[in-house]
Image (cartoon, rainbow, N blue to C red; front, side, top):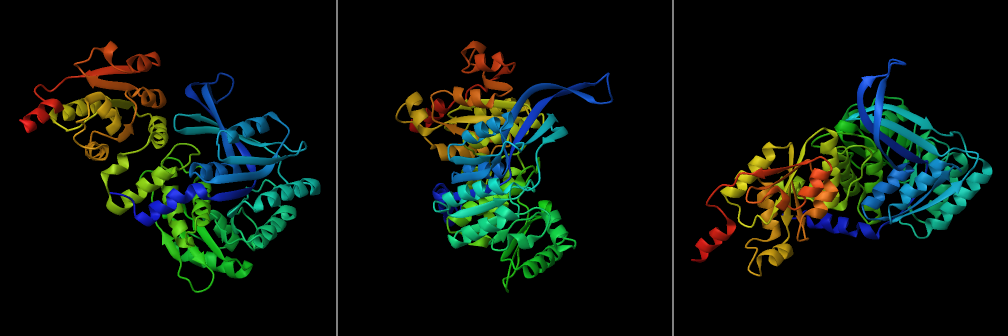
Length: 488
C-alpha cells in the first residue's frame, strides 16, 4: 500500500527545494570505545578508543538534515583558522548538495563538541569554543555572504545556538534582508528575548526554551498554548511550533486559528540528540515546496519520531518519511521494508544497543515451509534478522525469464509479515556482497546444501570476526518443485 498520494508527491519534490541556513556552525566529534576498568590514577573510567566520527553540528546539523531530505542547502556561518575548521569543511563536503560559505575569523575558535561514548552511554562531553558577539567587521562579512545567496533561496533558517553569530549586528539585518526578498523565515531560537526574532514567520523553541521565554510552565497542552499565545502577542510574532519531546509538538499561530497538537510519533526512543534540528529541516523543506504550515509541521513531527529511534545525531531520508506515512495510514508490516541507506541507520541503532545482527538472502519466490524453517533458525542465532531479497531483474538473471512468479513488492511484503524477519532489503545485484560489506552482519546464514566456503560473503564475514551458520534444510520443499506441481 502506498503512502497517501499528496504526501508522496510533496516528498518527491523535496529535491527542488532551496534552503539557506545562517547560524552557529559546529563540529561534532564522537569518540567511541569500551570501558573495562577504572584508572589507577583517579576514580575515573578508562575508555579504550576504537574509532571516532566527525560531523557538522549546530547549524551544520540542520544543513545535514536538509541535505538528507535531498534539498539543496547553503550554509553560512563562522569558522576559526584551526584544525577543527578543516575537519568541519571536510564533513560538510561529504554532502554533495550542501554549499558551505563560512567566514574565517582567526580570533575565534571553531566550536567543537567532543563526546566520549561507550556502548549506548555518553561518558563525557568536552567543548572547545568562543562565545560572545562577533566583531563589526566579521558581522559585515557574514551579512554580505548571506545576502549573496538570498536570490537562489526558497526558505531561510536562522539556527541560533547562542554562540554569538546571530547577535544583534547580524540577526535583525538578516531578517530584514530576507523579508525584503520575500523569503519564508524560520528561526530556531535560544533562551532570551524572542522579540529579537520579530519578522520570522515561525519560531521552533523546545519546551524548556518556550517556558523560559514566557516565564510560565509549558508541561501540558493548555500550558503550551497559553505560553505560545503570550509570547506571540507580547513580541508580535506570527507562529510558534513548540517541540515538547515525548508529548509531541504544539503549533500556535496568531489570530483566531485553533492550535494544533501533534502527538509524538516515535515507536522506540533511543537518542533525542539533534531531533530539534530534524524538525527545523523538515519544516523548512516542506514549506519550500508549498506545504501549509500545519501540514509541514505534521511531516516534521513524523521526521522527529524517526530520528529519535536512531543512535547519535542522525538524519532522516525521504524513503523513511514515506514508509512512516504508509505505516501511519495502514499500520502495515511493510515498514520493515527499507532501502540500504535507511537500513544502515536502523542497523547502527540496533548495534549500538548491543544486538547481534543476522543476515540471509535469497529469491523467496513462493514462501514454503523450508523458507520458514531457515528464517526461524536464522532468527534464533541473532537478535535482529535482515533478509536480502533479490529484485525481479536479479531473479530473472539467475532463474530465467519465467521467474519470479511473484514480483519483488509481493515477495517483500510476505517476508516482512513474518515475525522472524526484522528488515527486508531488495537488491539488484546478482550477489548480496554489497549489502554484506555495508551492513557487516555478525551472523551470515544459508541453507546446509552449501558448504561454508561456498557461501557468498562468508570470507568477508569471517575476516572481521563474524560467523557463518548453515541452517538445516526441511526436506521435500523447494520453489521449483512447487512450480512444477502447479504446472503439471
